[in-house]
Image 1 (cartoon, helix red, strand yellow):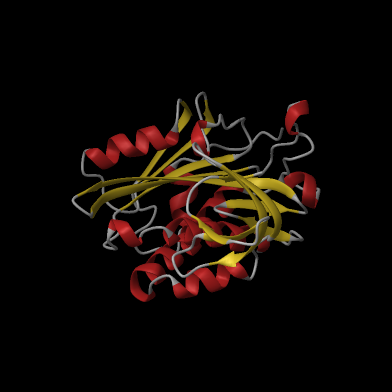
Image 2: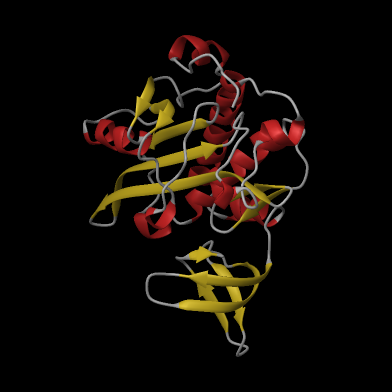
Length: 258
């Protein structure tokens, strides 16, 4: 694990090239969950683009309630968004975030950057980043969305259970990453993709995701079912298209690809 300066507003905001994302910046040395703190701020009318970042999380989480290990050296960041897109059409927003993260990782010179549906970022086959999107809606209107992003930047050690599945930028490149510069570039790219999704809809997001998407044999596990087959692409709403073993083509809108 590489020690790094804290990611407070004084370190990051001078590097920002955004109009609205990251202009309100909340840093914590340690917090339970940046998503929980961002949601609390959103419920108190925090502006779109408000960022919460922590050096460590004690109760970080991923999709389906999985614990997310958040040691020092990584980027643990949550953003408050207030999209105007109707709740029923919001699915591709998470894919847009994944594309922004992948582009930021690619800009460092990493190899074999792929996206695993719905929103894991892989480097050379190992998971280097994960995304958790939590929305609050009422009557079909989205009140706010909190997007949590965890990136293994300068994390150098993983528990034995994760060693064959996790990756880090530091281990891939052999050098430490400037976390403040990475955070600022991520904010820039995230703002661009969120704005583009709001302006142009899902089509450009899906095209960018498909260019990096990892497809092929999959098992998709959800709370109610398990689907085995071959992932062949995305439909127009961002659902994963799986050709089941019985030949039926099924769109999958929730679950975990394992």
